[in-house]
Image (spheres, rainbow, N blue to C red):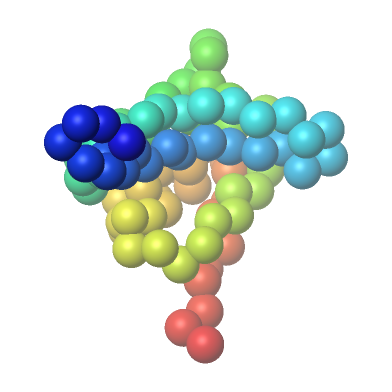
Length: 86
């Protein structure tokens, strides 16, 4: 809350279910397709990416997870299961 009113921030994070470790990927007020794609690239980076040693990425059906974001982890041995429309 600011003096101008309520401001919404979008936080992208990764949660390792087994250890409950949370890694912050980024925070933005306007999550564009380009921003989401870059966050996906950062997550699979060979030297410092959070997902470099993980096999699966699960996410909800939010439209912010664009097609390019879903393809990015798949390029590095990390599977993104297809979401159902049900």
